[in-house]
Every structure is written in C-alpha cells, then in structure tokens.
Length: 112
Length: 114
Image (tube, rainbow over all chains, first blue to last red; front, top):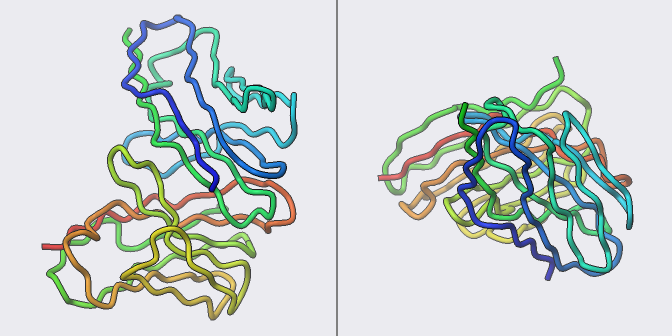
C-alpha cells in the first residue's frame, strides 16, 4: 500500500537558518503530494501541494518539488522564523482521491 | 467563515459508555473523513465518506461507526469505548475527490477513555 516516510524530529534551528525536511513516498499510479502544518493546539492546515511530476508547490516562503524519479517531496525554506515552529506532515493522496496517507510528522523548533 | 467544526474539544469518559463526536462543515464539501493522531504514528484514517449515504472504512475502523445522513454532518460514534481509543481525533473535508484539493481540518477532539 501507499506509505510516507519523513525525517524524524525534532529539528531545532536558529532564526534565519535554512530548513529542509525530507519526505519520501511509495505509491502506485499518479498520486498528489501535500505538506500540512500543525500549530500547537490546532488542526492541520494545508501548506502546499503538487499534483504531477516536477511540479513545485510553494506558499509562505516554503517550497517542495515533486520528484518522481526519487519518489521524494522535500520541504524547504530559505530563512525560518520563530513563528514557523510547528509540526509538519507530508502526505500522499491516491489517484482516486479518496485516501490520503500521512507521514508521522516532523516537529520544528526555531530559536530566536 | 469556511470551517470544519468538531465538538467537543475535550472529552474524558469511562470504558463502555457510548459517545458521539460531532463534525460539521459549512463549505458544501462532498468528501469527509475521520483521522486519529497518535504520537509517532502520524494520522491514520478511520472512516471516510464520498457523499451523502456513502461511507467506507479507512485503515483503523475497528470500534468506530459513522453516518452521513446530511452533506454537512459526519459524526463519529464509539459504541463501547476502550482505553486504546484514547487519542486526538480530527475531522477533515474536501470539495470532492475529482481533483486534489487538499483537506480542511477541524480543530480536533482530545478523547481520554479511562
């Protein structure tokens, strides 16, 4: 079945550092890929998505590129802020659209 | 405001006492789903619904029931809760499965079964 593997956290960075959170997936067909963010005490929010190979999703300074050859969708941000501290989830949606598999989540701490 | 509303936010109950967690969305979304979130396991799908009166099992459906009598509501029913159902539950919705829209999530329900 489909699966998602994320790098384990927590990841601790200083403000303005470069962020990479690795995500790899296994899926059949032509899945869509997502990153969600969860702030403390809240539900998940859609951060960005990519629906086909080589697509780049971007939002709020975050980016991720759909790499079919390496089955990866790594999340990057050039300069993190304290307000980016949260848990980040990578997710893959199956071709039929009725099932989304989430990774275990990666907690990010950003220090001032 | 477009949103998914879950109630209650927090619930402590005893083993075996039936409970319902409500979920309502005001966006006319066709697709709705329930997930549970446990440390180290991420989110696991319990049940989903493609539209009114159409529901199906996710990856961890044992011990749960759902219904979809109206488009906006998708309650999660635990008929005889057990301690291993202590978890953080999320309801999510999406306009449809025809395109990869992504989900809108509720704020979560933290359930403790003692």
